Length: 77
Length: 375
Image 1 (cartoon, rainbow over the protein chains, first blue to last red):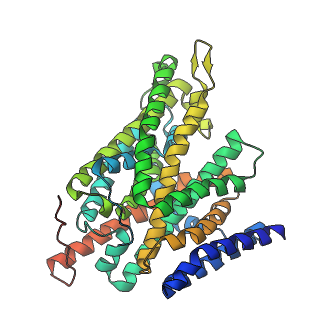
Image 2: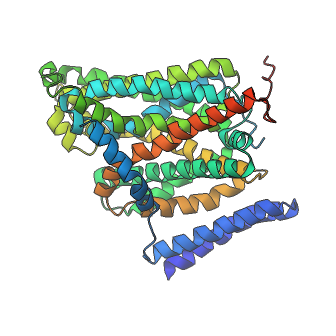
Image 3: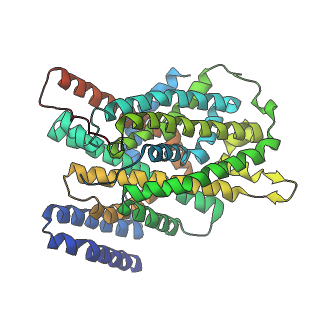
């Protein structure tokens, strides 16, 4: 619980620093991208803080590139 | 442009050297020694030789678009949607690289220096300075690298001098005991660890003052960095022996523990850690900077700085998630990292170069920008 509150507080501070200048300059696109990324960041941070199992992107990479690695190793054997 | 910084040619050389030795200086000797045994240094020389081809490839791509970054011209070459896809893939590559580097720092600190500190706190603190460097921009970062460079070289010099009495040349025998195959097999992961990652510099290349000399600087920087890596690998083999070196996670760190000058100057391995922290900081910051800048340019944002904080948050989580434990991490680096890097360090640049050449020949809408007038 404490972790989630902490992460939200950090996210609030980041938002307070970055968002007002963007709003003032009417940079809508920047604000959107920033907010989406921040929301995503908060989401995964809380998930990690609560020890939810987050899928590991490296597993997908391993799945794709393992055959290539085996093939190259086979050549050099 | 999103970034107005300008880099001198010498500064670029320094940055390439630091990038090449960053992280690899501590990790590469183990990977080399575990496969090639006492011939690890030959494998290192091969690796540096092949890397010259990569640098040539990046140079020939970079000089076609002297004012644009990778993210900008991939869109120009491949068209809007495919180009955006490719630059987002590149961003993901830089970002994963940054996460792995951050994790490497965390793993090193928690296994060697501060075993009782939770890894998260180390990651967050280190990320703090990385964010600071990224937000300040390219120019301050590179000036900082220029300030730290003499220290890195000086410390390395001290390390080499202090270890000279410990060298036993018979540890390099027998040379090529099992023929060339193990040497080539060891060269392969070594290509991926520092040299294919140099593709990041295509995001920085356009900010170098004089493109012509920047190409030379790229070569020289990679070569010097490579020679330092060869030297460290040689030292590891000649001082520790291949068996012992291969069993270590961080052989060059163990190497520094061997320093013993008149039973007085001992346990100076913090020097090695110092070199490593300095170099990996710059490497990590460049990768993080490249991913933030690349993302901003792909999405046509006016500033990359707004993305740094959210990306930083995601980076910490990603570097925690990437591997459940250090063995998984090491296997990934050894087996999967090089094929994965080949896609971005070799395959995509070749495609970009090929398509650009075809477009140029048949005079499509792609115009190469005229070279900037230099003072």
